[in-house]
Length: 228
Ligand SMILES: NC(=O)c1ccc[n+]([C@@H]2O[C@H](COP(=O)([O-])OP(=O)(O)OC[C@H]3O[C@@H](n4cnc5c(N)ncnc54)[C@H](OP(=O)(O)O)[C@@H]3O)[C@@H](O)[C@H]2O)c1
Image 1 (cartoon, rainbow, N blue to C red):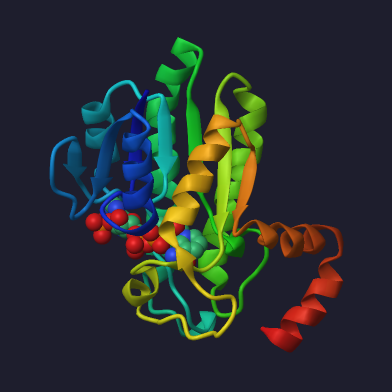
Image 2 (cartoon, rainbow, N blue to C red):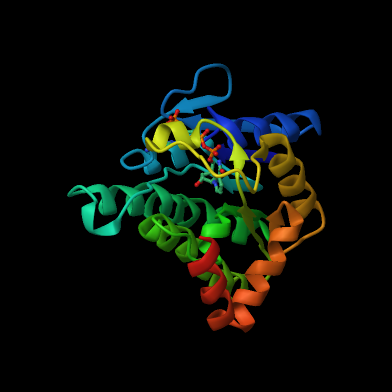
């Protein structure tokens, strides 16, 4: 199997690439700062078509690269909304669009989109980030119907111990839920591909608040206003 992992220079993407390689996959890695063999350094905001040409035929595409932002929406600096959508949504979908025709022609392939629990239920002070991650989920739900021969998996991590929070400029300060290691996401992601799962939450208990939010959003809003 030939896999391409975006955001493979750090955190969830780096560990996912390692888990796939340990299972015998040929793993291509990308990120702006990535180095080493089978790696292609590029900014996804501008480099998708060069990346797709370099990658060639791919069986498993893990769309994991992403950036965060936390803080009041009304105080976001100009350009930040566009940057979040460019990296988290547009670049990932453009890469999927570039590589999907090959999968369809071969009659097999799998896309994984790394969303967030913030894509399944709003997170305070993360309005735009939540919107980008919800966009990935909506895209996946529609694409799954359009290309039934291709696997489409959405991964919703909770709080994961990676440089993500430092990079976004706002450290994670809540006591709970506690951050869990990136390898938990990587192993769950690979298992979800192996078992053709449409959607997973990591840790798995997060599916309960997400499902309750889907069924009883007013109740969840009451809890969120009270507990954040
Ligand atoms: N950590 C969490 O708690 C958490 C929770 C839910 C969802 N997620 C999602 O999980 C995914 C991975 O995050 P992480 O926690 O592993 O964070 P991370 O350690 O900061 O990794 C982010 C990756 O994205 C890449 N990236 C960022 N901007 C890029 C750009 N313009 N072009 C190309 N690559 C770019 C980074 O590579 P370079 O810097 O080398 O470009 C890095 O490899 C993200 O989509 C994030 O939204 C994380």
